[in-house]
Each structure stands twice: as C-alpha cells, then as structure tokens.
Amino acid sequence: MRKIKLGLFGKILIAIIGGTALGWLLGHPYAPCSWGLSVVNAFSGVFGQILRFIVPLLILGLVTPAIADTGSGAGKTLLAVVVIAYASTVFAGFLSYFGSAFVFPSILTEGIGHLDKAAKVKPLLEIPPVMNVMTALFLSFMLGLGIIFTKSVALKRGFDELRTIVSKTIEFAILPVLPFYIMAMIANMTASGQLAAFGVTAVKIIGMSIVLTVLLLFVQYGVACVLARRNPFSVIWNMLPAYFTALTICSSAATIPVTLRCVRKNGVSEDAAGLVVPLCATIHLAGSTVKVVSCAVAFMVLANEPVTLGQFTYFIFMMAITAVAAPGVACGVIMSSLGLLESILHFTPERCTMLMTVYVAMDGLGTACNVAGDGAIALVIDRFFTKRD
Image 1 (cartoon, rainbow, N blue to C red):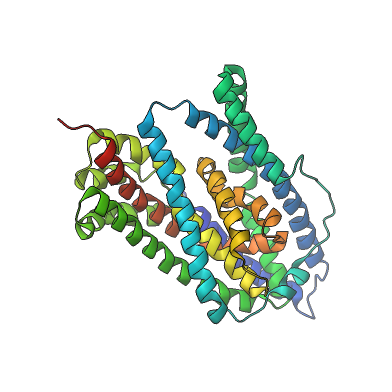
Image 2: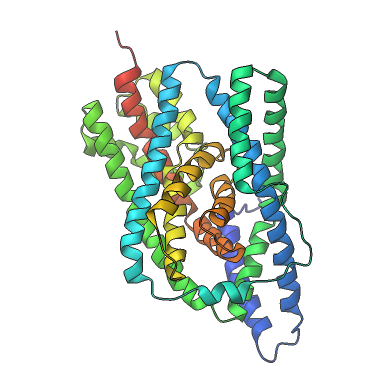
C-alpha cells in the first residue's frame, strides 16, 4: 500500500487533538504520571529557544539575497512587479488591521492575559540569538544593497549558500518538530484549563480572516479591472480554478501551471503571464499578511492591550519586507514574522505559538488569496508594460 502523506495542516490537526488528550490526562488530579507535564514543558522550553535562535538567521539568510536578486533584475517591468506586489502586501496589512480592529473588540470577550502566565515555562537550556531581529533586518538591507552597488560575486554566492542552509534547516529540522512543539503547548493549555476559550477564539479569527481575504480580492480586482478596462466578474470567474487549487494543495509554486492557464484565459499576453505568475508566486504575500495581522490584532484585543495604528504601521511595513523574501521556505512568512511580533508588538513566545497554530490551521486560505491576487497584478502589468503589435 502506498504511504499516506500528511501535509503540515494534517500534522498540526493531529498535534492539536493529541495535545488536548495528553493535557487532559496529565492535568487530571489522579494522573499516574504527574511528572509528565514537566517533561512536556521542558521540551517546549528548549524548542522555543531554538526557534528564537533561528529567526534572525532566517531573516539575514533570506532577505539579503532577495534584495540582491531584485537589484540585478532585467528592466523596469520586473521592478514594477516587485513594487506592485509590495504595495499590495502593505495594503492587505492595513485592510486587515482596520477590519480586525473594528470587529474583534465586539466579538472577542475572553481574556488571554492569564494564558501567557499559565503557559510560560522556564527553559532548561538558554540559547540566545546571535543578534536581535531588527539588527538582522537592517544588516540585511545594508548587505543586500552593498552587493548591488559593489557587484560582489563572492559575497552574493555566500549569501545564496546561506539561504540554502537556512531553508534546509527549516525544512528538515524545524518543521518536522513543529507539530510536537504545538502539541506540547496545547497540552499545557489543556492542563491549565485554557484550551476551550482558545478554541472558540480561533474559530472567530479564522472566520474574520475569510471575510478579509475575500474583500481583499474584490478590491484588488476592482482596481486592476478599472486600470486594464476589463469586466471584473468574468475575470474573477476565470481565476476560480487557481483559487481552489491553491486552497486545496496549499502551495503557490505547485499552483503555477493552473494560475498561468487562468491568467492567459483573462487575455493576458504570454510575456506578461510568464513573468508575473512565477515571480509573484514567491513575492506576493497579501493573503498571508492578512492572516498574520488579523491574528496579531485578535490576540492583542484578547489581552486588553492597545491596538495602535502607529505600532501596526511599523509592523506591517517591516513584515511586508520579510514576507517578500520568506516564501521560498515552507511557513516562511509566519516564521520570519515571529521576531517582529516579539520585538515590535511585544508578543510573548507562548502567544506567538498560539498565533502560529491558528495561522497554520488556515494555511490554504492565505495561499489561495495570494495566488488569485497574482492574476490582478498580471492584468496591470499587461496593460501598461507589454508591447503589442
């Protein structure tokens, strides 16, 4: 019999169920293994330290070569795609912020201030990062721009190899253990009696994210169709196969053949489609940004913390930069955002874990929005940058 391959979502779902059962058993007053919860907490503390250690290296290893690659591009059309993709991602962040800040205070009533305290575990092993997140981000800017201006082939090759090392570390060392980390955190929450309230909260966050991603797509195609002089209803209809394919397989890269066919069906030229679709599959992360910002606002509302526009403006612009560089890695957007959540929004590691759990639970939703939005960018590029006989 063929082996059944579970995606990351399936593994996370099993981790949530397993963590709930484990937490119920270990938290029971008559549990035969009362020391079991200490073992679970020790594991989550150590892995949390490893996760925080890798985040600055992930930013340095992904953002630096991404900036260098952008600078060595061929022409104004490529630059236009990058600028539009970044602007779309930033707009998605603000749309998510204003929508979430308006709705969540009225539908989220449970508090999580006690959750941070209940889930906090003193790690057995301290693994301090080599640098903080903002240092890594600005060092990436300096090195990436320096590679462009000096045309340093050796330095560029070195950071390309660093990107490969970081990507492989995430793929083969972090992601396989991530479900067990989430299971440990869920077990801790269940044992402390906090999981029921969190489950209801997660459903509300996911529902709000669905509404925001659909609204974002209508705005994107509304603007694109006005500029390209197309019928928005027929254009959106033609993109539905790509949307549902990405929703199912949760991969922008694997959806590229379907996206290309849908974009060409909308009348986009071969040149524009061939440039925009593969490139935006790695740099256009509007849907993923909606999810991260929506979750961040929700958790701050739950903690009765001020959700200020200035704080989120800084967060959205920084996250859009790291998001553009991160999608070459599985779960790269949320992984690269963890450091920003802690440094800018002052999230605790435990709250970051809960946010990551909700994010992964709706993984396909963000991917589908990213892929469908690529078609809107293709329309604009084809209208203004493609020469026709």
